[in-house]
Length: 236
Image (tube, rainbow, N blue to C red):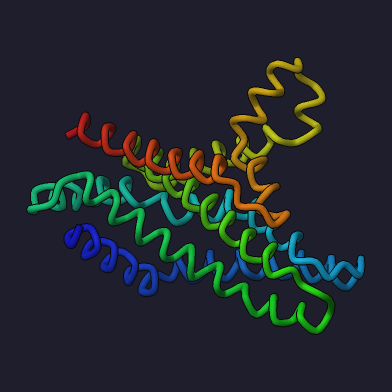
């Protein structure tokens, strides 16, 4: 565990020495606040839920930007071979990267808290909804990180990993959209609803932290991290 935390700490620090991290974080926060405050001032809706929903969709682009180079860039530059010859195994490396990504994700969510303070002056805020919403966003983002980790393990090209992860996450989000569900057979729509991670956020945004949904998301994180491990073990 100590080695995993050491890897995580090093990877986490790397985000703050990499301009790409700042650029994508800045763009995500700017877009989220722009859409949210537009809804507040135009529609007069002082509710935190639109912010949560906006971040949910922005994660589909923001998360792939974080994960695209986790493995692909290491393999392209030749540092992956150096990493796995050190006294750490692939599982430690992958979980170290995951923990670092989850830490950076948490920082990005905390940077949206000034919006909450502003809402205190504009309307009443349900603390339970705020808390559950942030828990849901963190779990969803962590799940996206695990998916991105696995896809990054499949290629040596970060751009391919970025595009591939973005496509998978966008398609997964579309699975819960009415415009898609209304045009396919009922049984297939039910399957899409079950597979859509975006659809599982609704209870969180309504103030509920369901045990079943939480276990499902955590299990998905473990599954895709394990798939990334198996992929890298097979290729080495």
